[in-house]
Length: 333
Ligand SMILES: Cc1cc2nc3c(=O)[nH]c(=O)nc-3n(C[C@H](O)[C@H](O)[C@H](O)COP(=O)(O)OP(=O)(O)OC[C@H]3O[C@@H](n4cnc5c(N)ncnc54)[C@H](O)[C@@H]3O)c2cc1C
Ligand code: SF4
Image (cartoon, rainbow, N blue to C red; front, side, top):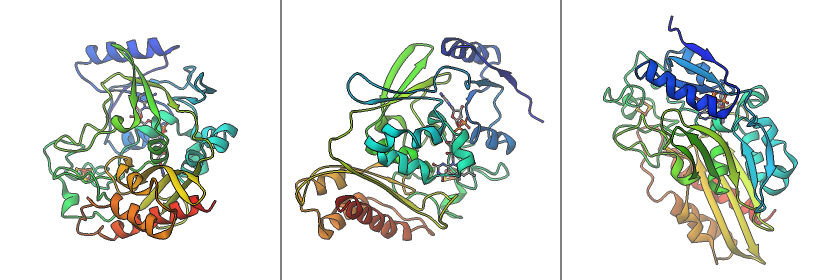
């Protein structure tokens, strides 16, 4: 059995200092913060993650949802997914976020899962979760059996020759469309990371999934002031109606004047190696009539660079239809 140390610091500074000290003391043994544990404990049971030390952040004062001075919203790192999805301001002004969270997992999981934990959830690629198999993400340089194996659920956008794993989060797709900012505190101080720069493409280093450095603590996420009059939709397509990850999903935030699209923010889930913001779709929408032809053009633009694997080519057309339908639903809401 793999043993680990467990600590429960009183404040964020102590958590970060403990992470830094433990890392030195254990000569590189992995340190992990644990929040809801719905990703981390799962992976520890499978021996996919074997941290030498766990730092429980559940008692840190990071569980508030508050208005910001510029009209936006500050979401604490340990705010539970259920609390975020059911918050009245989120439901009114950022409904795409509420819809996306409620489309994920189950009520029990959402009651435990946290904002920061969701940002950092790992891929569901079956080879990654099975230590008997090779996997470049889990063990760099060991190979990627998914490329010639079971890849039906995996990505068609942002893949590399080293990894084609999908980012499985629903929440992150909405946050990409809402242009969230992630706030981090680390040994070298605090910094703010634009959502689009937080997750990394796999490239030749699929083991590195975000720009976080070891010991960095996510303290909160901010959302900019809501776009006045925006219409927001999250649409998730999956093999069964609940408790299932996306085959394809779309988050759209539209503003319109009459029948013309004046502003668009679009992101896709289930098809990318990271939550996939599509500036190409947005460009195809703005200034155009909100009709079926425009929505199809936007969907074609979003998937233009998609690369199918042996079993997941169907996702390309599925994602196009998903996005076009989400746009139609938003425009006619
Ligand atoms: C059966 C099942 C079905 C699911 N279905 C879906 C689904 O349909 N859609 C979906 O989007 N998700 C789904 N999920 C994933 C779920 O949303 C995530 O497991 C959850 O959001 C993770 O949050 P957590 O707080 O439990 O994270 P944890 O497991 O506590 O942590 C996850 C990672 O984040 C790190 N971490 C946590 N907090 C911080 C912090 N503040 N700073 C730095 N690092 C931190 C941890 O060290 C760990 O590496 C499912 C999960 C399960 C088990
Ligand atoms: S797709 Fe990525 S996570 Fe899956 S086996 Fe290949 S390297 Fe591992």
